[in-house]
Length: 264
Image (tube, rainbow, N blue to C red):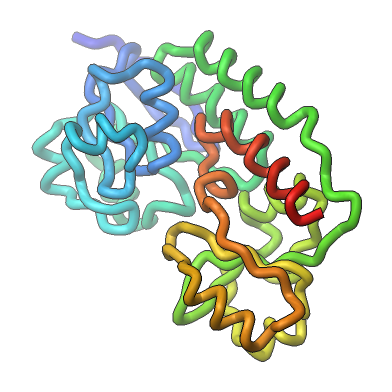
């Protein structure tokens, strides 16, 4: 019998988990990649259809649905002894239903320090604390020399189309924008507000960033906005570098610095 222990997640929920989890399901793409980089190939049995990194897991691990629509029957078939979720990316009713049957550890991340805290806590959760600390140090070393833009450009960042949706102040993406030295023109709004073209015109950003995910913006969307905001600089950006808060952060600082330099 696998001994258990009691831990606290980032929602301050106390959960009882196995001493050594052997059948883990990850419901969050960025945390799935983290589990891979922590060396858990044999113990992760289920992921979502959006967990595209690493490719080997995407092709070989059982997919239990999406982040917003988990197929509980597939979860039941896998009989996990630990599920790793996120407050924002997963749906509360589904997570509560799963938590009634399985240990569910939930992250809650809006800033880089909270992301590093998640990595440390997940490392402890899956008995990879030392490796987690190594990743944290590497990420911290990457972000430390990040030089913000000399001029605080006013930026609008979009994640969705039809309707247009941007990011408010209480998001991880907003934290990344701030680390670049940019001002989020929708910083006065919460979470992921719907934005009309008229509202965007009124905000009059210097730069508009169109993310590669969750909506895959293309050049035609750049052209659509350029027609109504001819003075703005509009570019496509890698959404993973702004929104993935797991070990993808190992690559984010260099990407952000290059973007800052490009726009400066």
